[in-house]
Image (cartoon, rainbow, N blue to C red; front, side, top):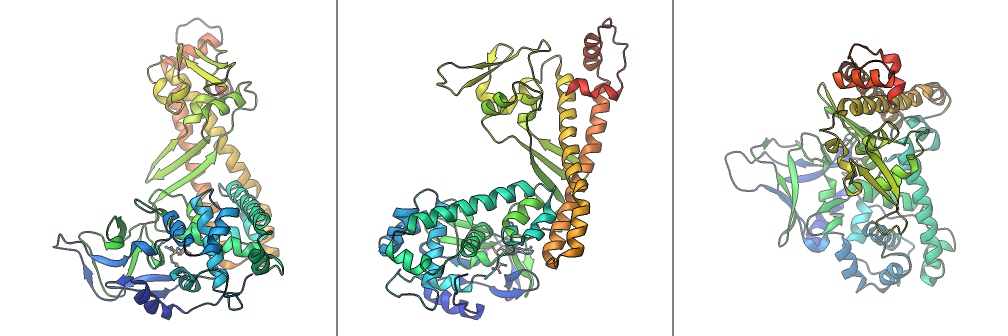
Length: 482
Ligand SMILES: C[S@@+](CC[C@H](N)C(=O)[O-])C[C@H]1O[C@@H](n2cnc3c(N)ncnc32)[C@H](O)[C@@H]1O
């Protein structure tokens, strides 16, 4: 890994003075198990006042954004060259390139003629050497995530990061200063790329004026689902950290922000490397595939044109799920429904058009739940939906149960880092819990739907019985619905 000068956090006040960052009532401290964080340096209150209580002000010209990089490239021709050969695709990509250049300039043996030093060159020296995201975990630690909703996205992310790094190397190998500073002696390695990606993922903000950005000092604020502050960006003042209204915090209390209320444990672990134990909202996102025996399966995926995601959210005793693709999965024309898919010859509006009740609904596929709401067979569709959903949940639970033994062996034989092991086991337990609860809730939903007159009538017709509503189907007939 590239050797970098590390500055102690005690260097932060000097940095703030030079860079014009103002702390008002908060200071940065080392905190137990969370790296650095902000704490109140005195009692702060927003009670009985309409005035905004600012805790920190970061000027615009320090916010690392697409505009910042463009501006900086005007005075740093090495950065300009780097962006020209390897950047210009995404803001994230350009920020990673910028950070790579900063850690290079910040390394002690660096050739001073390369790159123009700036505030960020100093600031990166205070950023953590290691961010505990699963992308930096060892293989045997990542293996404990088998069967969780994080397994596939994590594997995909690592693959993408390798691809990005290879591209970056290939694109810069012919630039003489890049070759000398990075590649000739393998000074810059994949682990450095993992580090800047982890900084980006765990510290970036989406700001109204600056867009995707990193903000020095404000990025020292840790997360809480009951945060006592929030940040706001204004066109003239820059970025400020503000105490929430009607709140009083005593000296030494941690100042926190929310990294997002509805993030699942897997998302928190993926982006920030921890799980929020206090969060009472449990969520999980899975991929849904078309049914293996559906001849229109691939066509449905192509027509849907969105990731076929299934989102589960449990708040208190209620489990909500959202999966617009599921409604498309459960419909077919063979059972007399007016559902059709047509391949377009000219493909001018995409290859597939989807028709429901003779109407072209291709542009409305995420709203199929509403489209079927008035149909006489609505309960039949809802029952199919519940069956397919339950199958997907069962499949995921089987993956989790099926990997338990391997996890126990790994735990016994490998030296797993205790925090990572606890996080991975915690994620497994929380996902098993949510999936099991969803499974039982779907079971009751299914049982209720099985008693609906529309479902009974439909079953009778399918079985060739008279339409007298007398046949009571038992749940072994579930397969008919999937
Ligand atoms: C934006 S940075 C916050 C500053 C960071 N603690 C540091 O030392 O630089 C986000 C990182 O802080 C840590 N973090 C934030 N909130 C946390 C929490 N509630 N529990 C544990 N770690 C937390 C995680 O490592 C996360 O990736």
